[in-house]
Image (cartoon, rainbow, N blue to C red; front, side, top):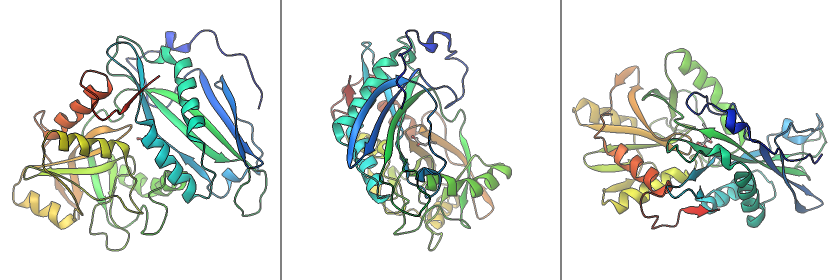
Length: 349
Ligand code: COI
């Protein structure tokens, strides 16, 4: 890998933080590390650049690509914090393990995040409480070999891009009962590329039919809600917050975990249990007030305004006094340093 001089000025100065789309603009830097001969070694922070790989690199062929989605925030006092990097590290390790990829040393992971974010602090304007830095750490198999095998070489990279609201309006979703995202015993809990690639076709069909997203159901019976691919799913009904338990087919969301903790801190009754399509339909048919929403790093807390189950549209509650917004505001206040961080979620750099 070529080492170039680091940029002295930031493109952030010319960036329009009022008008941008998620994921189009990288910050100025990239952190890289490589795995060769059974060891990881840091290549340090580099200017953001294209990667050069052999067309035989195994990541192009057999799916050994794993990533995380994380965020860094500018706190009210001007300092910068990464949200729950240890929890993300643990999940990344599980994903790597599931894909037979070597686990990164924790200090190397933290070094990569810290160095690239500190170099990119201009992308966290001090006067904007609606902007965060989205961090994309990823590991890919780089050994140049076409044979079907576990790669012996890897690249770890950390890239960043600014993020505001990922979804700019409440969502219209379809409960998907034909296609499945993941099956029990598969790799649905791992954050690896194939889970997203396999979701595109059914999601595209739903988008063509006027939906923003699908909610996946379990592959065996298609009776229970699983997750939405870009976010975990939660329901608030009869005064209780409910979410399906994580499993081999559901991603263990860090935002999901944080929202559950916040609900407990606020004494909001909480249940982790299956949510069946029948239960959801029954709630709507009884005229119950139902909140349905997604939670994820990019999505934060995203209200669902319309959910289609078996060709019938139902309309969850999305007014400003919905409980989901209390949970969202609490989460944002903690990670932007406006409320006490009693669980030590903010990792100051
Ligand atoms: C995340 O929320 O970090 C994800 O990986 C989902 C993707 C839609 C950005």
